Amino acid sequence: MYKTINKEELKKRIDEGSNFALIEVLSPEDYNKEHIKGAINIPVREIGKEANERFNKDDELIVYCSSPTCQASPSAAKKLDRLGFTNVYDFVGGKQEWKEAGFPMEESSERKNEGCC
Image (cartoon, rainbow, N blue to C red; front, side):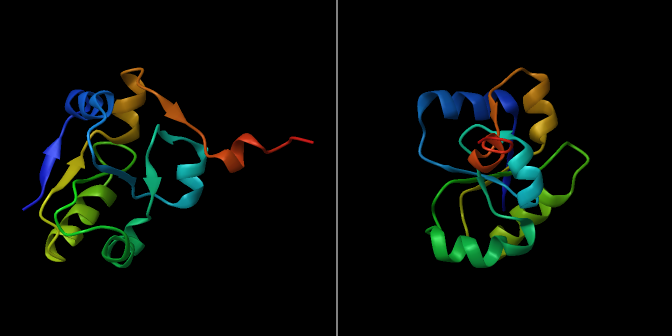
């Protein structure tokens, strides 16, 4: 069964350099606009296939989406759980809570280069 994690716990794990994958499960367009610093993007519709190819079943995976009302990350966490991943967390607050707390966000490198040169 997957667990949930709050913004303070997630920030602490990031600051401590804990070994986990932080995964935004929204579309690449949403991810490219901005995402939690250090996150990778695997859209919810691709999470099963990608996770099986990229991670071990006992790797710590933390998924998130846009806000507490978004259902993409709980859906991704359930899918990972069904696939046998044993260390899955859903950051329920998502980008909205993270940003409101003033924690670091970043844009994708593709977006940073828009309008350049």
